[in-house]
Amino acid sequence: MMGELEIGKQKEFKDWPQLNYFHFTHARNGGPIGLLTKQHVLLVGQKTPKNIVFLFDAFGKMYQNFHLEKKIEGLTPGTKWVLFTFNSEEDLVLMSADGRLYILDIVLGEVKEKVHFTDFSRTMQESSYTIADAKLDQVHNLLVFRTKSSEFYYVPNVVTGSVSFVKPLPFFSVPRLELEEADRDINIEFLIIPKQDSKSKQIELLVTDPIEGIHLIKENGSKYLKDMSEFLEEDDDVAEPFGHVKYLALNAKKDLLAMYCEPENEGRIIVMKSDLSMEFNRQDTY
Image (cartoon, rainbow, N blue to C red; front, side, top):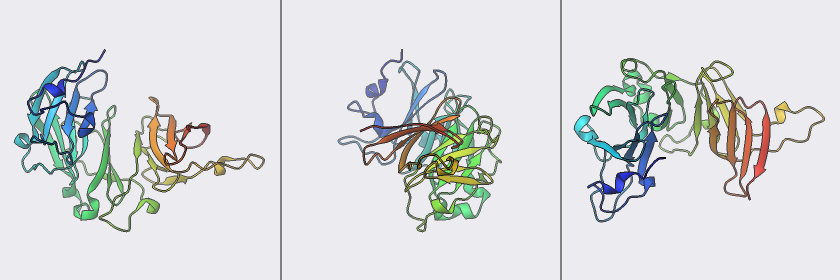
């Protein structure tokens, strides 16, 4: 059984902090747990620990912590992290909003790999290409990130010795998701289906639409659904809309998708195939 995290016992905190102050991650199969204070958090009456990684074992016992600013040149307390997770080798993977990626050995507390993705593309150096969000599939070490202009890129096999010279590859562009104002961001969620798990044998993304419905995006195409009408027979009932999709979840095999929709109203849970070809169930939660 997992014990209580010893975060409140650290000298950096006068009181027991709230976990929503942190980026939180854990390795697969009962591996280590990591915490990193979010960029916008300010603690009252004390200095807020910035760019300090707190590491715990699976039982919540303190393992070690280290200051990223002592390990990584050019970091500031205002550095915004969009990715904080472990890869399959239990190395810590971090990515900043300006496209810097680091792989850290948590045993030695040293940076093993570093790469600045904007070095690969002049267009990615523009302000509209600030990274808004990033995720890593911990099984296959597949990195996917989204820019503020809602373009998606992927980098395969983010492990030591493989990532330094890999150019980020783009997914199919979806005009509906592109922003007219480059300095504005939209609140969307996405999930990764690696090619090893997808029915199409391509990397796939499931992406919520900012208004209604969901997108299935691949390297060479995309599908947008706001209901299941294209799959209905002539004598079937009228398809009910999904509404605004707020949250997404996949099962372990990544063949089933659950969506939580219309949270501003009564709330609705919909379960369907992850290739968006069939809806199994929907349930209002009011």
